[in-house]
Image 1 (cartoon, rainbow, N blue to C red):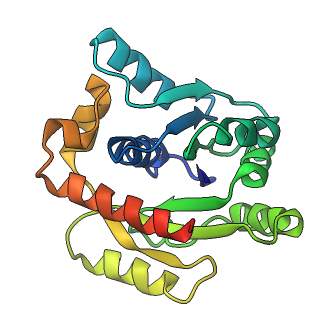
Image 2 (image 1 turned 30 degrees about the vertical axis):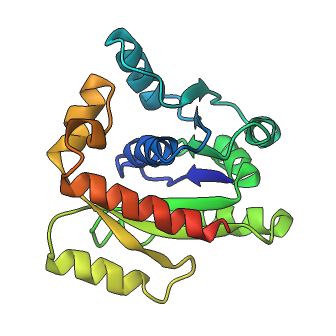
Length: 212
């Protein structure tokens, strides 16, 4: 399964979710490759920090920030169980290529009146991709939530009957994610009993079920 995390808006946590989904599936014994298709290279930076700290390799991270991704990712998928694409913000050609490569698109949004609705351009690109890939599945993911706030409930309610729909699993705004990123680690490596680890495990399970 090829899973692409995409949103035209930057700063919604695409890289964090991509890395943690890849890590969760890897720890469950699946073969995983992560494609960093963001010119900023956040996932590549994480991978380099991990190598510098001499930590064991959990999954491969490749930099493919180019619009041939839809031809290269399926080749990677032949040798893995999952390919996770950390997509670019505001680069339409790369976004189109990632959409054409993916079996499943996850659109991270934060609990905000503005993030509650993906940009018109993002949804237009998704609709365009479905002309060529009518089977393409897409879901919103509510990320960086802070408890049971009114705004989080309002965002979830706004997306409840939306197309794409909202996943049930949510991921909170947690310091451990920032700490892990700085060290080239994942949340479960710092504290496997923490809420962050449980949330990622639930998210990975729900996404996995969509691919069956």
